[in-house]
Image (cartoon, rainbow, N blue to C red; front, side, top):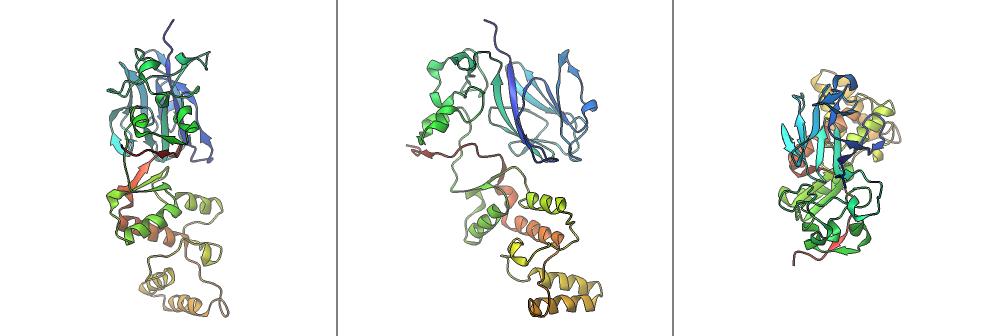
Amino acid sequence: MNPQPLRLRLTWKDTATGDCRSPILELPIALGRIFEAMPATINGERVSRIPLKSSQVSRFHAVIATEGDSIVVTDTGSRNGTFVNGTRQTRCILGNGDMLQVGPCAIAISFAVNSTETHCVNSHIFFNPQTNGPDPALGPQIVSPLAQTNSKGEFPPIAFLQANQVTMRSIQSMGLPVVEIDWAAVGGGLGSLMWVDLLRICGVKVDRIAVLGMEEQPYARYRRLCLNSQIPLRERLRSNSDSCPDNIWGWPPYAVREAWQELLKGRLIVSLKLMWQVFAEPTFAETYTPRAGNVFDSIDRETVRIGWNQMFRYGRVRGIRKTDGFS
């Protein structure tokens, strides 16, 4: 029987359309901004070319190919770099479940195989626990049922999804890194920011918190919705202040900051109008709403203050299950 060629499933959210894409591709795979700028063949092998429409992605950004028994991603001299699990890499071996970051695109990596018999045991890939790579010599007798992928080669495996509780030993047998953390925020959006900010105010240290998300800025989706609704950064959020990200940081509030900025520009009348609006709303004046850009700038300052980037990790949640602890 001929060995089945290894393929990769790449899963990411299209930043232009918002659609989730999850193709299964043969290696080598080229990633870049312009389709024609990526090579059609590498060493005589036909290349699967993936265009990513973003100015943060170089024309030909990176390539994923096999080197011996490993799958390796190589940055081709891109301007903004290629990241694997949040760390910038020039060349890096990829493992099943890794997160590849190219520009704004967070791409989940999972191994797959060609098979006409999708329900037979041979359709699974077995991973060497020492190398964390696919090893055809391994068979089902030495691999935990939890470590077997489902019929489409996706993670998490079927056994994981069907179990109400899994053992830590089974998780570790997958060969994937296991990290214990006290507090985890899922999603990495504004809700995660507010909760993590409260934890930090209460004294929880940065190394005990993990934030899992697909976009590094917690307001990225909110800003995208604003721009799609024709609300540029200079415009005010077109609704009452209840819909704005809560100013949990206390003094000074948005209105005072904006009034002070106008005063520094010599626009005394505008500054006084802003203060009048705040004290007279909603009976004698319209409710004050902040400019979108000021809101996002405030969030940026707070993320720096609480160490958001140290807690943030690129990734998505594929399943949540109880465990039996480390015993």
